[in-house]
Amino acid sequence: SQTIHQWPATLVQPVGSPLSLECTVEGTSNPNLYWYRQAAGRGLQLLFYSVGIGQISSEVPQNLSASRPQDRQFILSSKKLLLSDSGFYLCAWSVSIGGGVYSNQPQHFGDGTRLSIL
Amino acid sequence: GQNIDQPTEMTATEGAIVQINCTYQTSGFNGLFWYQQHAGEAPTFLSYNVLDGLEEKGRFSSFLSRSKGYSYLLLKELQMKDSASYLCAVRGKDSWGKFQFGAGTQVVVTP
Image (cartoon, rainbow over all chains, first blue to last red):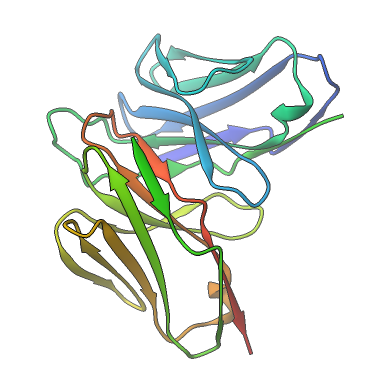
């Protein structure tokens, strides 16, 4: 079966410090991968998605970046964190979709990282 | 893009039924998904609709009308553990499986 691991679970960082959050998926190949941020009491905002190694699409302008160095590894980074970067960060995967096949596949989420910026 | 609306909060009694509505406007549609999210946890997948009609999964059912841009999630025989936020998500046709999520409906189940 497929599993998704995300770490760390919680992180407290000072303003201006760097960030690296990691997400790995097991039990599947060539998944679509996603990074979301959820502010307190709000919905999920898509930050980045990737359909393959080295392929990253950004949804919103920000001081965050993402990378996919391996098929099942997705990393969210920042060189200098801002106070507004606080939130709950979620990684998700879905079966790769092409030509409308597997369109019924949901996204499956990792346990999330709660990031607090001081 | 998509615009998704759902109520902010609903309260219901244990054992009762609650219906959570979701309306959407989208330039392309390739499925509507419902997720449950308990406080401090990740969302978990509940149900999926791509064709009009009702999908039933135990105590949970989801309905879709594509012509009206409308869906609902029906929770029957409410239990205290059903207290959570319920997220409506729409997948567009021109996307690589991307979802647009609603802000979520907080359901509070009282004894």
